[in-house]
Amino acid sequence: MASSSIKGNPTAAATVFLLVVLQLQAAAFAAGAAPGSEEQREFDYFVLALQWPATSCTNPGKCCPSNGCCRGAESPTEFTIHGLWPQYEEKGWPSCCSDASFSENEILSLNKDIQKYWPTYRCGTTSTCHRTKGSFWAHEYEKHGTCAAPVIVGEFDYFLTTLTIFSKYNVTKVLNDAGFVASDTEKYALGDVVAAVQDAFNATPKISCAKKGAVKELWLCFDKTFQPRDCDLANSCPDFIKLPTYEPQEANKVEGAIPWMGDAEAII
Image 1 (cartoon, rainbow, N blue to C red):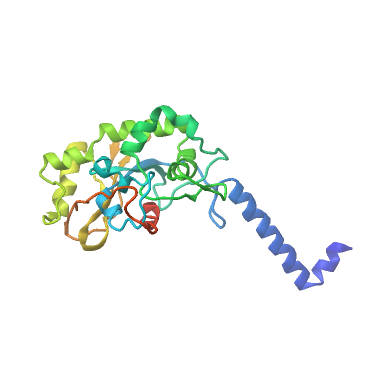
Image 2 (image 1 turned 60 degrees about the horizontal axis):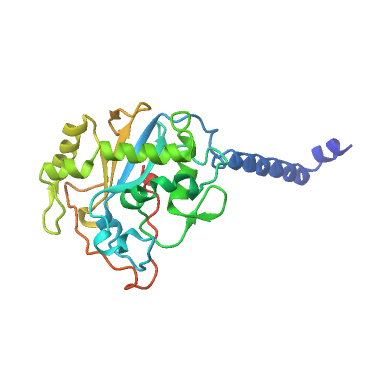
């Protein structure tokens, strides 16, 4: 009786269809897939995304102890980690692949290295996979780290593996050895910078820039055995780029609000 009633009532049929769609979207979100996307599958390769701190810290509106821009002499002056991101060969990446939640207690033994090599450049919190707010590291692990299985399983291994790769493939040292050093006056040919990394790691990086050619991020790509591979992604920089310097602020001297540098994977 109800079935025949729906068939004879277009409005009721449309309502039922809408409810089904919403239920499917909710199921997709719970599984870690964005509504409207295809079902997520295992990733194809990794991106190690590095941030140039001077560019990320250009307009630090608020300084606080958690903000890596505001640590005085302890503020970073070399590339730091943004994240280790599983990627698909085609455009896109998996995200929020499990219901695991970040726990700072899991990585207490790594805290010193994380603060030094993987600092956050903001105050406050950001979104997590559970529709809540959490730290920068919670965001990175829940969104990206949970998708690194079966190669990397668990929070501790995700952070330890990322720190290990970052240490082994020291981009700042490679560039400094090739004569590309932080400067507010020097500009370097993009092709020469790319070539320096290629020569060192036998793989092509991706470089993205902010205004006036200031390097914002540099990505190294790896296969699932963590061997370097080409980043088959276009650079977003002019022909000449720069590695600007930054005068660190003290944590209690600047007021306001620091803008959040959104995840750079969105520029793929």
